[in-house]
Image (cartoon, rainbow, N blue to C red; front, side, top):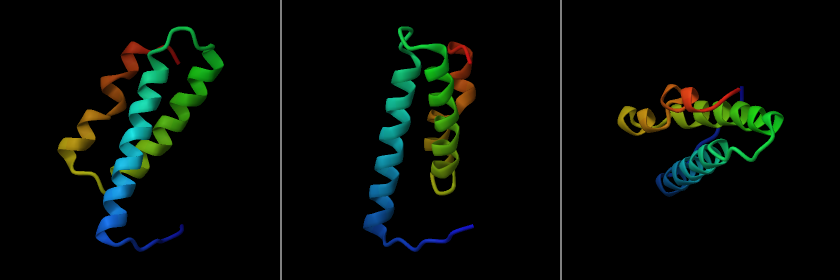
Amino acid sequence: MLGMLFNEKECKELDYVLRKELDEMLLDLSDQRLDQNIRHAIANRYKTVFRMYARFAPQKELSKYAWGNYSSQFKH
């Protein structure tokens, strides 16, 4: 395991970057034109980024990105 220290500004920036990345992946997953293998790769990456975000996000914010809210919409 690797540990990192961030100041308040860096934490806010990391929060923003991870949320935007999750939003982009959700948008990509909703694109029916994408190949099944690509969608599967995006879904796996989504889970990894979500776990990173879950380490410091408030529960209220975290629930917006919970995979259970979206997984029924997408075929894996």
